[in-house]
Image (cartoon, rainbow, N blue to C red; front, side, top):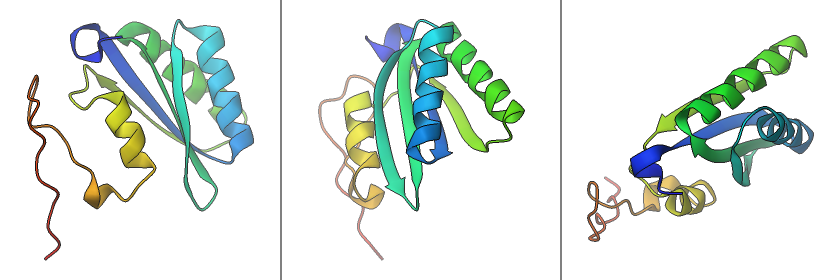
Length: 119
C-alpha cells in the first residue's frame, strides 16, 4: 500500500506479547487493516504496527482504546496519516537504536539524510 497517497500507519504500544496479540486481533476484526509487525522494544513493551486507509486505522485504534480501557490495560496509541517515512524503515528503526536511523529527506527523495552525530 502506498502510505503517502492513501494510507495510514497505526501504532499501539502495550506491555507484554499477550496484550499485543489481543490488540492485533481487535484491529483485524474491527477494521480493514493489515498487521505490519510486532516489535519488542524492551522492558516487556511491544509495539504493534498496522496499515490501512485512514478511516480503518482510526476505527481500529478507537476500538483498541475502548477495549483496553474496559479491561484496564494501559496502551499508548497513535495514527500517522500519509507518513513520510516508509514502514520498512520504521520497522528497522524500531528494532535498532533510533539515533543511528537514516531517514530520507522529504517526499520522493532517494538521498538519505546522513546519520546524526553525537555531541
